[in-house]
Amino acid sequence: MKEEKLVSLIERVLGPAKRARGGEEAVFKCPNCNHHKKKLTVNIYTQRFQCWVCSFAGHRVIQLLRKAKAPHNILDELKKIDEKFNFKSITKQKPKDGPKLPEEYIPLYKDTNSILRKKAIKYLESRGITKQDIVKYGIGYAESGVCENMVIIPSYSDDGFLNYWVGRSFMESAFIKHRLSPSSKDIVGFDLFINWDMPVVICEGAFDAMSVRRNAIPLFGKKMGSQLKTKLITSNVPHIYLALDNDAVKDTLKYAKELRAYGKQVTILDLKEKDPNEVGFEGMLNQIQGSKPTTFSSYFEKLLFQ
Image (cartoon, rainbow, N blue to C red; front, side):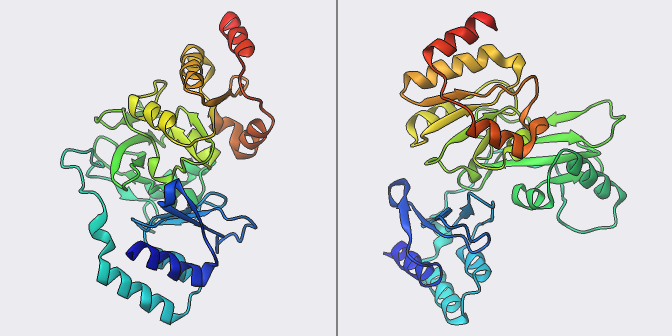
């Protein structure tokens, strides 16, 4: 099979793989962070890869092997495999009526002398968003149009197609602080970056999810859509952390009850009147590591005193 030839080729550079998600993914040690455990997953059908420790990610295996400094003969073999089996042809067809980024969208990773670009980057830095995040999530900005003076944060499906976007103003005096994609919110936020065999964190906003860094799904609001519920219930996710704002207590309790009813282990994180973006990565990591699954008694306690 073409997929097995691809895995065999990667193993010659990164060492033996283990399989996940029913064999759909091969898991290796990451050549970027060199973590001692195998944390880099490669989808053997689409070639998309991501490390769940350092967030090193890409869409083609050749990017991965170049990072690992694979010899030229290995890279040549990979190109032949791509040409012979046409891996691109197996990706799903792009939806015709799916959401589109605003026409004025400009990628922030493109270096220009624009003053607005510098302001946008400074704003993101104030929110704890790094240059690595800008590249990973494809964050952009707009100098005109409906998202004028806003950063634009796209969300992509597991197939790599845009499924939503949000805009946030980087001007303190702005009358309109944010814009939302006119498309449906019944999507899985940042689905492209989610490993459904690992614990996930559910939060409200894009900045919240980026602050958590690892396996975090933004709702782009306070309501959980049917697509996300279905994926959480049917996936192999072993633990779900709910990190919604305090003003969404009723929703949080409802989601915890529903997910527990399907046998999922759920923990409601108490962020003390803050959101994950305010708590930051280290704070969220400590919260998750120090938390315990929500029991029926703690569930009813929260229900009584909310």
